[in-house]
Image (cartoon, rainbow, N blue to C red; front, side, top):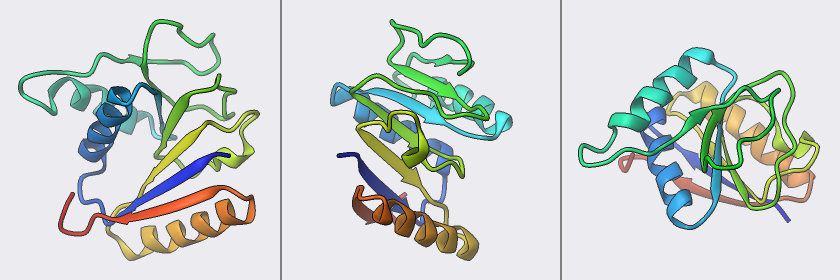
Length: 146
């Protein structure tokens, strides 16, 4: 069963996404950072190189319509259609897409939610959607932490 974790009240979404990606990679997962915003993908691309002064996270921007790269553990992508991912992937979802509608939902979905009231309202709707579809849910309030 797919596990969905919501992180709410995140003040710097791109930086937090990089930290979560690093943790997922260290746990042995392959990670797909999914966004519907090309500018956000570019910001994430830059942030992954610089968010830690002593290191960087190797990654690749993946055109989701092309074959999945076999040798890259961290991908950034966005597309009109959700891709089918092999087992073991973690999706860090920064888009309005519902990964319950993917051809094969990933093992783990991480949803990062900002601090604005409308973002939190949408997050509640997303939480209810995943709950209705039988996903395992958890929530972390990051107010004052991230």
